[in-house]
Image (cartoon, rainbow, N blue to C red; front, top):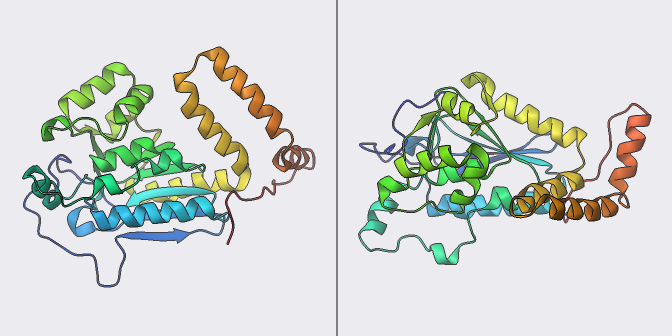
Length: 285
């Protein structure tokens, strides 16, 4: 896995249209034995630029992940030199000319990492801008390589911060850093992203995906899927509540959690000094 050194704001400039190898989907999907679903954006010839086909499959795979109890965590990464530099330039060009090549009003919101009641880890291996930036930002944890490039490149396109990014970004990096990134559209490397709190960990290219999958696997093996789903909800909802309101909600959630089998299993596994055996979260087959 290598990193991109190009400007993520214009990753497709001068690029040849290179289709995905015949028979390969635009997103690769693989589930590990311990329940980690690895989703790899797979248009390396176009730096994994976003398309309608990719979005439809992305939503479908997240829907499957939500309902499949065998999936306990999700890792998102990109094939080749990039994570995702945003919308494919062909789509942007058509849309800026007044065409409607992309039925955004007929698609669900691009908030699947936030909405999924299971942990999502982004393994950012290169250029990460636009929709790619949004999806990484909405993930619960972000790993990156030092030379990855992040850009909230909306102002340079005459657009606003999409998909709730203006709500999330200040809560991740602080108001000043969020203002800088959104107003300037300037790219930042993985190193600077770590300094401002945009990413949680930096790794060398060959270590990135294995580390992300191992981290997700540890969550899958050791943590209650039910508890993690509630914690994700708490982290999101408490941003708009007072401490007293958040504490009150936590007391109500705790009361319910103590009635569930995961609480009993968590305590028993600790006492018996063995790995916990939690049930998966989902509707089953």
